[in-house]
Image (cartoon, rainbow, N blue to C red; front, side):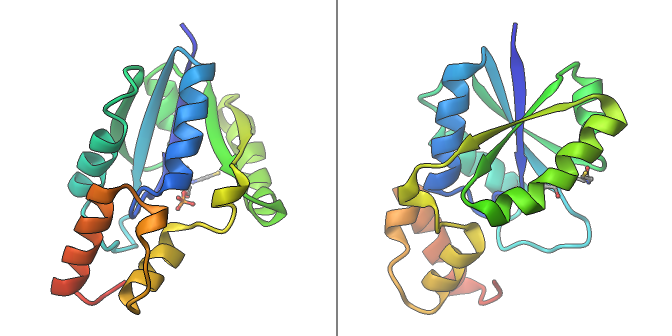
Length: 162
Ligand code: PNS
């Protein structure tokens, strides 16, 4: 069975993320979306909530599940006997950021990174930009599933840190 991990912060999961997960889910037997916990970075959404939001967003994709990990990402892959990472690429900037990580992950644990090009509709979409737009009163709904957009507005209404 071919499995791959799609790692990220997903704070929150956007339509751009969903696009990559969907493409990967049709290319691999199983996809594990791994929410990576960064103890030094306090996100807007808790890890539990990020997981719940992704699970709801991907409920229609039967070969996709969601997990979490703290620490070195390749340790997760080794522990679960998964050899492949999938990363979405929006631009050359993403590639420059991703290439050293892909090389490092291959050197550390012989993990292969497969890059999937995002749809041009989402080339400018990032979690941080979407949060900023919503925080400043702009319409972030085109970039998020409706349940995630509602949660974002609710969280921002009660907590003003992005
Ligand atoms: O969504 P992001 O924040 O761009 O995702 C980056 C992420 C979490 C995939 C990356 O920072 C990562 O792999 N972190 C885990 C720690 C690790 O393994 N670091 C070494 C990478 S070579």
